[in-house]
Length: 361
Image 1: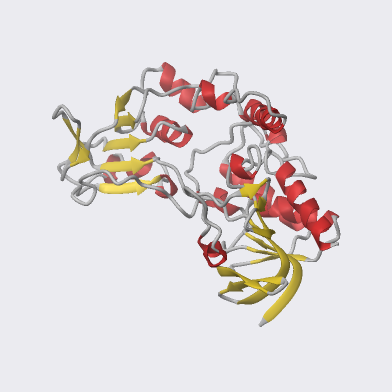
Image 2 (image 1 turned 30 degrees about the vertical axis):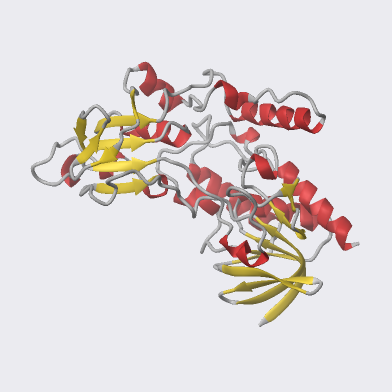
């Protein structure tokens, strides 16, 4: 089965939906292909206690404010899933799921998108697959020797998996857990585990907390101002990221202020029973949780041969320099200021949709 449209959007999470909103407003014929079996993107797979950095009104996609969650200043992930589900339905976005894209190919004047349920041809395409499906774990010596449990952020659910009756006989009733990573995920998961486990938090450098009054609203404003300065040729101030790595959301702030978040430097290797530092100090562990980030999920674009130095496909705005019919959306600042956030993805989605509409004319 082969079908043709103006634009094929790959990915039905927040970036794909924002793109669909603007494509619909411009009157383009498009389809959104989503590998997930249900709406909500990566938000439906996060850990139980995860909350947004910003209030609902400042965490919205274009066209519709996220409603507040009763009793919560910062909505939880389940509320975001409900919002994205409603958003998709409200704007009658043509999402097809579950559809897994195998590859995007040049096909004369069109781009051919091969999937596990047929072929789509488009005059343009938007890749909005995010990073959640590509967790990164560093190559630390001894990783295969460790006999405990190893998880990445994507597999973490909550403290119940590491404490109480579920701990194997002969081990501490408070599971010994090592959390690796000094970013927001590492800090939030460490705070989540601090009360119910024997926690060791390991970071490459001393944790850098942003001021307690900084949340997602300020992060977006700083990212936008920085991009504007760079576009105008002014000096790069580094934005808010130069001031810290961790947003002090309430659970993190509470654990930090209670003295429960004391980071240790990065260990040099894993052993059969735990980890070891350069000075020979060792710590036993039942589980290690790698909060070590993600890589862009771009394997479906490999047939186009667009990879540049490092991990990124070179872009001008959202447009791929090596294939102007392709736009990349929602992977980070290199595809638009704060474009991997709910509030930040709207503007680059609008720019991508407008650029495509102009090119198709």
